[in-house]
Structures are given as C-alpha cells and as structure tokens.
Length: 365
Image (tube, rainbow, N blue to C red; front, side, top):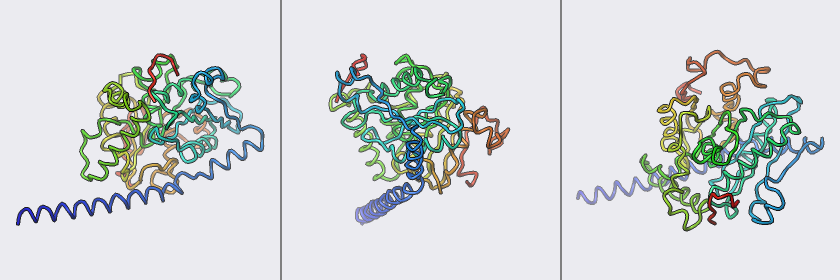
C-alpha cells in the first residue's frame, strides 16, 4: 500500500515536472523571438554597410591561422557610433554553451543598441563547437583586446576601463576574463573596467551543490555542463579537475574583480539563478566587490536585450551604474540613487521584488 502510494506520487511528480519543463523551454524560444530583436542587428548592419562603415577583422594574423586553422573562426565585427565621439570600447560576447554562438540574437542587436546609446561596440565571434579547445575563447578575447588596443585611434575608442558584455556562456567567458587566475593577467591583457553579464553561466561544474527540485532541469544542467566541457577540453581534458574548476568563476574571484552588473531571469530553466548568479553574488559580497544584480520575475533564458519583457531596459540601467559619466548621461539623467534607494557604489537589487580538441595554455593557440 505504502509502496504503491509512493510510486503514484513519483509518477505524477515526473509527469508534471516534465510538462512544466517542456512548456518552459517552448516559452523560452517563443520569448526569444521578440525579446532579442534580431531585426535591430540586421538593420544596423545594413545601415553601416550602405555608408561603407561596417568592418570585420580576423583576430589572428594569417601566419597564425596557417599554423592552426581553427584560429580563423575568431573575428570581430565593428559597430561605430554615429556621434563621432570617442567612447570606452565595448566588447560583446554572445552565448551558446561553447557549442555554437548566438551572434544574431545576443551579439549584433546588442551592438546596435549600444550604438543608439552613443557607444562604439565590437562583437567577438570566438571559437566554439568543433573549433573550440582548452581556454581558446579566453585566448580569442585576449587577442581581440590587443587588436582593438592597437587600433584604438582608428576605431575612435579608448581601452581605458573598457567594458565586456557577455550572455550565458559569453557571460562565463567575460567573467572568467575578469579574474587574475584565468583571465586578463594570464594573457598580459589590460584589466576590463566593467562587466555586464546577462544570465551568465558562471558555475559550470559545481551547480549540483545547489539542488534542483525539478529532475528534468537537473538533467538539462548535466547535459549543458558536459557538452561545454567536451568542446572546451576534449574527451581527455574534460576529466581533469583543474580544467573543470577553471570554468567556475566564483572560485577565482579576488578583491580586485572588476565592477559588475548582472541580471538573471526568474524562469530560466537552463541556467537557474539559484545555482549561478546567486552563487556569484554571494562571492561578491564576501570580497566586497562593487556590483549590481537584478533578477527579473518570469523572464526565461536567452532574452538578450529583453525587449517586451520585464527585463526591458536592463542595458540602460546597467550603463547608468557602470558608466554614469558616459554617453548615456547626455540623454538620460543618472539618478543619485538606485530603485532600491541604495547608493550606486554598491547595490544588490532584485527587480522582481520591485514589481518590474585539447590544447594547453602554453601559447599554442
């Protein structure tokens, strides 16, 4: 009798959680179709091309690509602003779980929006999928920083306190690059001045320490983590503890971690905030990092700009925080305090509560 009762409960639990997960994933893809506004990126590229101002550059030199052909997949797209004013450089890294890149949804439209706000932006297409290897995306980002620095006058930007923007796995890349251990210092690059992280996949291999009530979401987490590890480190490298630990950002946060804005969605079934952004926020609190964290009720994964969702306007909100004296100051007054009434120097906000193949790191890349 008891056994039958337990089995019935288990059956209904598996069925209901499965239905919930499927509906959540379908909803995620539906919301993505309008929240990311792919047309904004397409229209901006078309406008720049008609003016002869759209440019793309390989991250690596021809001789470097000849030695290792997969390097040829890394490139930057330049989105110059229309004001002609020099701004802090903005480098955008789309997500894709290190298996592919969501450039059309989390890259080009975001760069177009930065242009509207007066910034010159760069979209980095780093190595992913079969082109990826041990920390190759971090190498690509370091080379992009060097390339933009070398041509800063030509691009009309300053690399002092440059801004990194990353979504999902791109958020993992940017946050990792913000650490000394596996980021800018490792590659001799300048330290970023600020990070803007959208639903970042920061706790790649330790999320199981934060249990899921939904077993199907847990299985999704296992699949995403192991797929990312496989593409990043290869079949052999993915079993090494040091490699797996390197992708868990919270383990490498130090007192000089860059100023950070991050947001997550309350209905994110791929990268739940409880196992990722909440964990990173806790580490920020421990080290006294200057950061702001918004959590938007009911918002799924992959929303990019978040248009027509409760996350709409997050980018402007973030720029008020990390660059209050930048171009946004000319169009939108910077409030003396945030929505929570706390000083902008250090806040931890929750918008829903407000109602709103293997390679080593020896330079062989």
